Length: 191
DNA sequence: AAAACGATCTACT
DNA sequence: GTAGATCGTTTTG
Image 1: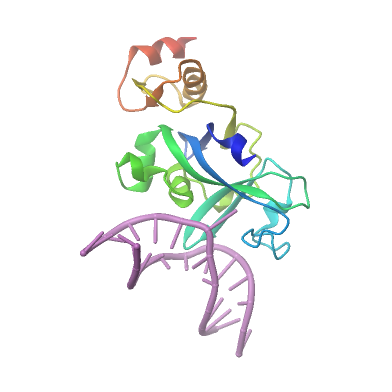
Image 2 (image 1 turned 90 degrees about the vertical axis):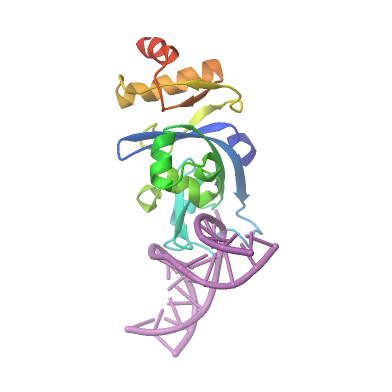
């Protein structure tokens, strides 16, 4: 699962802000013989989500920061994949605001940085990632961003911006940003 | 109730 | 490359 998640899009919509990152680094924590896994010493209040159903979030705090995992095994097993880094794709101004930096390399590099950038915290522990609401992962992986295409959300609602983003990115494999308006965005939004 | 512990980050060299 | 910050959670008293 850790390998399969590479290239997929992590999409968050918290505080009515849509942010998207392409998963570029993951780390698996196994249920058996992995002393680094949070489930190694059995169930606890903190790691309960890891023993819950797969496809749900496990969000925990470490050094005053939040980290996000996707649960990967059936209930009672206790295994998850830590999302370690993203490539910023969309909602970059929101990320910059939450992270208090505009350095693109500092936005989502690291498991806690990406959570801060996307507004992920303990309220999303146990969250069902398969509903396509608030926080979820795209079904398909997409190639790395190679070319910059300007995209706007100024004249479209947030919800249609989500669909626009996914369709546009998947179809064209273009890097998208929320900074300026462009013809491509307007055209795609209409359809 | 207090202390210790991190699946980390920032600032600075 | 590293010292120091940081705070939710667990462990200890």
